[in-house]
Length: 47
Image (cartoon, rainbow, N blue to C red; front, side, top):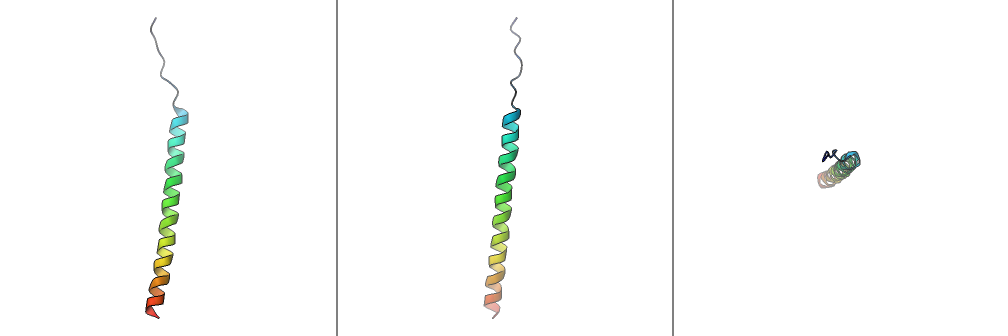
């Protein structure tokens, strides 16, 4: 009589994973750019 089914939250799960991977990719890209800039600064200091 009062049986309720669990709501379908697949969309939220997929959105959460997508957000996680996008944020992770941006962070890794940011780290790569920082590393490249540090390498350039180090080379400039050595000269």
